Image (cartoon, rainbow, N blue to C red):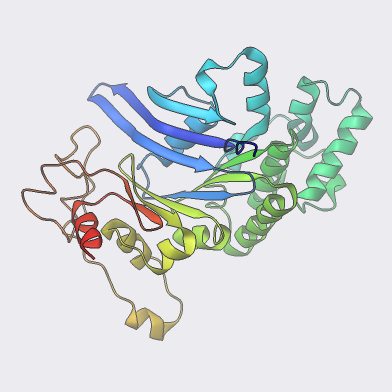
Length: 332
Protein backbone atom coordinates (compact mmCIF):
# COMPACT_ATOMS: atom_id res chain seq x y z
CA UNK A 1 0.00 0.00 0.00
CA UNK A 2 1.33 3.41 -1.02
CA UNK A 3 1.75 5.96 1.79
CA UNK A 4 -0.93 8.63 1.95
CA UNK A 5 -0.09 11.88 0.19
CA UNK A 6 0.73 14.77 2.54
CA UNK A 7 -1.93 17.49 2.95
CA UNK A 8 -1.83 20.58 0.78
CA UNK A 9 -1.06 22.86 3.70
CA UNK A 10 0.06 22.11 7.21
CA UNK A 11 0.85 24.65 9.91
CA UNK A 12 2.88 23.13 12.71
CA UNK A 13 3.50 25.10 15.90
CA UNK A 14 3.23 28.37 13.97
CA UNK A 15 4.37 31.41 15.92
CA UNK A 16 4.56 35.06 14.96
CA UNK A 17 6.01 37.59 17.39
CA UNK A 18 6.27 41.27 16.47
CA UNK A 19 8.72 43.67 18.09
CA UNK A 20 7.00 46.96 18.96
CA UNK A 21 7.75 50.02 21.08
CA UNK A 22 5.50 48.51 23.77
CA UNK A 23 7.41 45.24 23.73
CA UNK A 24 7.02 41.90 22.02
CA UNK A 25 3.55 41.08 20.69
CA UNK A 26 2.82 37.32 20.34
CA UNK A 27 0.23 37.61 17.55
CA UNK A 28 0.20 33.85 16.86
CA UNK A 29 1.26 31.23 19.39
CA UNK A 30 1.64 27.59 18.43
CA UNK A 31 -1.07 27.18 15.80
CA UNK A 32 -1.54 23.73 14.20
CA UNK A 33 -3.82 23.49 11.14
CA UNK A 34 -4.16 21.15 8.18
CA UNK A 35 -5.95 21.79 4.87
CA UNK A 36 -6.43 18.95 2.39
CA UNK A 37 -7.35 18.93 -1.30
CA UNK A 38 -10.89 20.16 -1.86
CA UNK A 39 -11.33 20.74 1.87
CA UNK A 40 -12.31 23.89 3.76
CA UNK A 41 -10.97 25.02 7.10
CA UNK A 42 -12.57 28.20 8.48
CA UNK A 43 -10.51 30.17 10.96
CA UNK A 44 -12.87 32.30 13.04
CA UNK A 45 -12.51 34.72 15.94
CA UNK A 46 -12.72 38.35 16.98
CA UNK A 47 -10.77 41.08 15.23
CA UNK A 48 -7.15 41.12 16.37
CA UNK A 49 -7.02 37.46 17.37
CA UNK A 50 -4.32 36.59 14.80
CA UNK A 51 -6.36 35.23 11.90
CA UNK A 52 -4.83 37.42 9.19
CA UNK A 53 -1.33 36.99 10.59
CA UNK A 54 -1.79 33.22 10.37
CA UNK A 55 -3.13 33.52 6.82
CA UNK A 56 -0.23 35.69 5.64
CA UNK A 57 2.31 33.25 7.05
CA UNK A 58 0.49 30.35 5.37
CA UNK A 59 0.66 32.18 2.04
CA UNK A 60 4.38 32.92 2.36
CA UNK A 61 3.80 36.67 2.62
CA UNK A 62 5.56 36.82 5.98
CA UNK A 63 8.16 34.56 7.56
CA UNK A 64 7.01 33.14 10.91
CA UNK A 65 9.26 33.51 13.93
CA UNK A 66 8.61 29.91 14.98
CA UNK A 67 7.09 26.66 13.78
CA UNK A 68 6.71 25.46 10.22
CA UNK A 69 4.58 26.07 7.14
CA UNK A 70 4.52 22.87 5.11
CA UNK A 71 3.21 22.70 1.55
CA UNK A 72 2.68 19.14 0.31
CA UNK A 73 4.92 17.99 3.16
CA UNK A 74 7.81 20.35 2.37
CA UNK A 75 8.95 23.13 4.68
CA UNK A 76 8.37 26.41 2.85
CA UNK A 77 11.36 28.03 4.60
CA UNK A 78 13.71 25.38 3.18
CA UNK A 79 12.40 25.24 -0.38
CA UNK A 80 14.69 25.64 -3.37
CA UNK A 81 13.89 28.47 -5.76
CA UNK A 82 11.86 26.33 -8.18
CA UNK A 83 9.89 24.73 -5.35
CA UNK A 84 9.21 28.17 -3.89
CA UNK A 85 7.95 29.47 -7.24
CA UNK A 86 5.61 26.49 -7.56
CA UNK A 87 4.33 27.05 -4.03
CA UNK A 88 3.68 30.76 -4.70
CA UNK A 89 1.73 29.86 -7.84
CA UNK A 90 -0.24 27.06 -6.18
CA UNK A 91 -1.19 29.09 -3.09
CA UNK A 92 -3.10 32.26 -3.88
CA UNK A 93 -4.39 34.95 -1.52
CA UNK A 94 -7.72 36.79 -1.78
CA UNK A 95 -7.49 39.99 0.23
CA UNK A 96 -10.28 41.43 2.32
CA UNK A 97 -10.41 44.85 0.69
CA UNK A 98 -10.87 44.89 -3.10
CA UNK A 99 -10.50 48.68 -3.01
CA UNK A 100 -6.90 48.30 -1.87
CA UNK A 101 -5.84 44.98 -3.41
CA UNK A 102 -6.35 46.08 -7.04
CA UNK A 103 -3.97 48.61 -8.56
CA UNK A 104 -6.10 51.71 -9.36
CA UNK A 105 -4.04 52.63 -12.44
CA UNK A 106 -4.24 49.21 -14.10
CA UNK A 107 -7.21 48.01 -16.10
CA UNK A 108 -9.06 44.86 -15.09
CA UNK A 109 -7.49 43.09 -18.07
CA UNK A 110 -4.02 44.04 -16.87
CA UNK A 111 -4.72 43.07 -13.24
CA UNK A 112 -6.17 39.67 -14.06
CA UNK A 113 -3.48 38.66 -16.54
CA UNK A 114 -0.44 40.20 -14.84
CA UNK A 115 0.69 36.90 -13.34
CA UNK A 116 0.12 35.04 -16.61
CA UNK A 117 2.31 37.53 -18.47
CA UNK A 118 5.03 37.40 -15.82
CA UNK A 119 5.17 33.60 -16.08
CA UNK A 120 5.11 33.66 -19.87
CA UNK A 121 1.83 31.72 -20.00
CA UNK A 122 0.30 34.34 -22.31
CA UNK A 123 2.48 36.13 -24.83
CA UNK A 124 0.18 38.27 -26.98
CA UNK A 125 -2.60 40.77 -26.31
CA UNK A 126 -5.10 38.41 -27.92
CA UNK A 127 -4.08 35.53 -25.65
CA UNK A 128 -4.29 37.80 -22.61
CA UNK A 129 -7.75 38.99 -23.54
CA UNK A 130 -9.02 35.48 -24.16
CA UNK A 131 -7.60 34.30 -20.83
CA UNK A 132 -9.17 37.23 -18.98
CA UNK A 133 -12.57 36.57 -20.58
CA UNK A 134 -12.40 32.93 -19.48
CA UNK A 135 -11.41 33.84 -15.92
CA UNK A 136 -14.07 36.52 -15.48
CA UNK A 137 -16.70 34.16 -16.85
CA UNK A 138 -15.62 31.52 -14.34
CA UNK A 139 -16.39 33.89 -11.46
CA UNK A 140 -19.75 34.90 -13.01
CA UNK A 141 -18.66 38.41 -13.90
CA UNK A 142 -20.59 38.62 -17.15
CA UNK A 143 -20.46 39.88 -19.78
CA UNK A 144 -16.67 39.93 -19.24
CA UNK A 145 -16.09 42.30 -22.15
CA UNK A 146 -17.91 44.98 -20.13
CA UNK A 147 -15.17 44.98 -17.48
CA UNK A 148 -11.93 44.27 -19.31
CA UNK A 149 -10.96 47.83 -20.17
CA UNK A 150 -12.37 49.45 -17.05
CA UNK A 151 -10.46 50.51 -13.94
CA UNK A 152 -11.27 49.28 -10.42
CA UNK A 153 -13.05 52.50 -9.39
CA UNK A 154 -15.52 51.99 -12.23
CA UNK A 155 -16.79 48.70 -10.77
CA UNK A 156 -18.96 47.93 -7.76
CA UNK A 157 -17.54 46.32 -4.62
CA UNK A 158 -18.92 42.91 -5.56
CA UNK A 159 -17.49 43.17 -9.07
CA UNK A 160 -14.09 44.19 -7.71
CA UNK A 161 -14.00 41.21 -5.34
CA UNK A 162 -14.85 38.85 -8.19
CA UNK A 163 -11.97 40.36 -10.14
CA UNK A 164 -9.73 39.60 -7.15
CA UNK A 165 -10.94 35.99 -7.19
CA UNK A 166 -10.39 35.76 -10.95
CA UNK A 167 -6.85 37.08 -10.53
CA UNK A 168 -6.17 34.44 -7.88
CA UNK A 169 -7.53 31.72 -10.16
CA UNK A 170 -5.32 32.78 -13.07
CA UNK A 171 -2.44 30.66 -11.78
CA UNK A 172 -4.71 27.60 -11.38
CA UNK A 173 -4.10 27.41 -7.62
CA UNK A 174 -4.38 24.29 -5.52
CA UNK A 175 -5.13 26.31 -2.38
CA UNK A 176 -6.94 29.61 -1.88
CA UNK A 177 -6.50 31.65 1.28
CA UNK A 178 -9.51 33.93 1.55
CA UNK A 179 -9.04 36.63 4.18
CA UNK A 180 -12.45 38.08 5.08
CA UNK A 181 -13.12 38.11 1.34
CA UNK A 182 -16.87 38.65 1.72
CA UNK A 183 -17.03 40.96 4.75
CA UNK A 184 -17.31 44.16 2.71
CA UNK A 185 -20.09 42.90 0.46
CA UNK A 186 -23.87 43.11 0.66
CA UNK A 187 -25.57 39.93 1.83
CA UNK A 188 -26.97 38.94 -1.58
CA UNK A 189 -23.62 39.52 -3.28
CA UNK A 190 -21.88 37.70 -0.43
CA UNK A 191 -23.95 34.56 -0.94
CA UNK A 192 -23.38 34.69 -4.69
CA UNK A 193 -19.60 34.93 -4.24
CA UNK A 194 -19.60 32.12 -1.66
CA UNK A 195 -21.48 29.94 -4.14
CA UNK A 196 -18.88 30.76 -6.78
CA UNK A 197 -16.04 29.81 -4.42
CA UNK A 198 -17.92 26.65 -3.44
CA UNK A 199 -18.17 25.62 -7.08
CA UNK A 200 -14.40 26.05 -7.45
CA UNK A 201 -13.90 23.82 -4.42
CA UNK A 202 -16.22 21.13 -5.75
CA UNK A 203 -15.32 21.27 -9.45
CA UNK A 204 -11.57 21.92 -9.27
CA UNK A 205 -10.72 20.39 -5.88
CA UNK A 206 -9.32 23.68 -4.60
CA UNK A 207 -8.55 23.68 -0.87
CA UNK A 208 -9.54 26.70 1.24
CA UNK A 209 -8.22 28.37 4.34
CA UNK A 210 -11.15 30.71 4.88
CA UNK A 211 -10.69 33.55 7.36
CA UNK A 212 -13.82 35.14 8.83
CA UNK A 213 -15.21 36.66 12.01
CA UNK A 214 -18.75 35.72 10.92
CA UNK A 215 -19.85 32.28 12.08
CA UNK A 216 -22.91 32.46 9.83
CA UNK A 217 -20.60 32.70 6.81
CA UNK A 218 -18.43 29.89 8.19
CA UNK A 219 -21.50 27.69 8.65
CA UNK A 220 -22.68 28.35 5.09
CA UNK A 221 -19.38 27.87 3.32
CA UNK A 222 -17.74 25.15 5.43
CA UNK A 223 -20.64 22.90 6.40
CA UNK A 224 -18.73 19.89 5.05
CA UNK A 225 -15.42 21.17 6.38
CA UNK A 226 -13.99 22.28 9.72
CA UNK A 227 -14.05 25.35 11.92
CA UNK A 228 -11.08 26.39 14.05
CA UNK A 229 -11.87 29.01 16.69
CA UNK A 230 -9.02 31.38 17.54
CA UNK A 231 -8.56 33.54 20.63
CA UNK A 232 -5.54 35.78 21.22
CA UNK A 233 -3.30 33.87 18.84
CA UNK A 234 -4.28 30.34 19.89
CA UNK A 235 -6.78 27.75 18.66
CA UNK A 236 -9.21 27.03 21.50
CA UNK A 237 -11.59 24.66 19.70
CA UNK A 238 -11.60 22.88 16.35
CA UNK A 239 -13.78 20.25 14.77
CA UNK A 240 -16.33 19.46 12.03
CA UNK A 241 -18.54 22.45 11.28
CA UNK A 242 -21.88 20.80 12.20
CA UNK A 243 -20.40 19.79 15.55
CA UNK A 244 -18.88 23.19 16.36
CA UNK A 245 -22.05 25.07 15.33
CA UNK A 246 -24.58 22.62 16.76
CA UNK A 247 -22.77 21.54 19.92
CA UNK A 248 -20.06 24.05 20.88
CA UNK A 249 -18.08 23.22 24.01
CA UNK A 250 -15.59 25.99 24.67
CA UNK A 251 -17.17 29.03 26.41
CA UNK A 252 -15.61 31.37 23.85
CA UNK A 253 -17.14 29.40 20.97
CA UNK A 254 -20.50 29.48 22.73
CA UNK A 255 -20.22 33.24 23.17
CA UNK A 256 -19.43 33.74 19.47
CA UNK A 257 -22.40 31.61 18.40
CA UNK A 258 -24.76 33.32 20.85
CA UNK A 259 -23.78 36.66 19.28
CA UNK A 260 -25.00 35.58 15.81
CA UNK A 261 -28.25 37.37 14.96
CA UNK A 262 -31.37 35.19 14.80
CA UNK A 263 -34.02 36.59 12.40
CA UNK A 264 -36.88 34.45 13.78
CA UNK A 265 -38.34 36.29 16.84
CA UNK A 266 -39.45 33.05 18.55
CA UNK A 267 -36.04 31.46 18.15
CA UNK A 268 -34.34 34.69 19.20
CA UNK A 269 -36.33 34.79 22.46
CA UNK A 270 -35.54 31.14 23.18
CA UNK A 271 -31.88 31.55 22.36
CA UNK A 272 -29.54 31.05 25.29
CA UNK A 273 -27.23 34.00 25.90
CA UNK A 274 -23.74 33.31 27.21
CA UNK A 275 -22.70 35.81 29.86
CA UNK A 276 -18.96 36.37 30.06
CA UNK A 277 -17.28 37.58 33.24
CA UNK A 278 -15.84 40.52 31.32
CA UNK A 279 -16.20 42.12 27.90
CA UNK A 280 -12.63 43.42 27.92
CA UNK A 281 -10.15 41.61 25.67
CA UNK A 282 -6.68 41.37 27.27
CA UNK A 283 -3.76 43.08 25.55
CA UNK A 284 -1.30 40.90 23.67
CA UNK A 285 1.50 42.82 25.37
CA UNK A 286 0.17 41.88 28.80
CA UNK A 287 -1.48 38.48 28.55
CA UNK A 288 -3.05 36.95 31.68
CA UNK A 289 -1.28 34.05 33.36
CA UNK A 290 -2.56 30.55 32.68
CA UNK A 291 -5.44 30.42 30.21
CA UNK A 292 -5.69 33.76 28.35
CA UNK A 293 -9.50 33.49 28.37
CA UNK A 294 -9.87 33.02 32.13
CA UNK A 295 -10.62 36.72 32.96
CA UNK A 296 -13.74 36.43 30.76
CA UNK A 297 -14.61 32.74 31.18
CA UNK A 298 -17.80 31.68 33.04
CA UNK A 299 -16.16 28.31 33.85
CA UNK A 300 -13.20 29.94 35.58
CA UNK A 301 -11.76 28.01 38.52
CA UNK A 302 -9.25 29.93 40.70
CA UNK A 303 -5.93 28.22 41.15
CA UNK A 304 -6.33 26.19 37.97
CA UNK A 305 -7.28 28.39 35.04
CA UNK A 306 -5.10 31.31 36.16
CA UNK A 307 -2.02 29.19 36.87
CA UNK A 308 -1.70 26.56 34.16
CA UNK A 309 -1.59 27.05 30.40
CA UNK A 310 -4.12 24.67 28.79
CA UNK A 311 -3.08 22.51 25.86
CA UNK A 312 -5.12 21.87 22.73
CA UNK A 313 -5.97 18.19 22.99
CA UNK A 314 -8.18 15.80 21.05
CA UNK A 315 -11.37 14.83 22.85
CA UNK A 316 -13.79 12.68 20.88
CA UNK A 317 -13.86 14.18 17.36
CA UNK A 318 -12.78 17.71 18.22
CA UNK A 319 -9.82 19.54 19.73
CA UNK A 320 -10.31 21.61 22.88
CA UNK A 321 -8.12 23.89 24.97
CA UNK A 322 -9.80 24.14 28.38
CA UNK A 323 -8.80 22.72 31.78
CA UNK A 324 -12.37 22.42 33.09
CA UNK A 325 -13.92 20.94 29.94
CA UNK A 326 -11.09 18.47 29.42
CA UNK A 327 -11.44 17.24 32.99
CA UNK A 328 -15.23 16.96 32.90
CA UNK A 329 -15.44 15.35 29.45
CA UNK A 330 -12.78 12.79 30.31
CA UNK A 331 -14.61 11.97 33.54
CA UNK A 332 -17.69 11.16 31.48
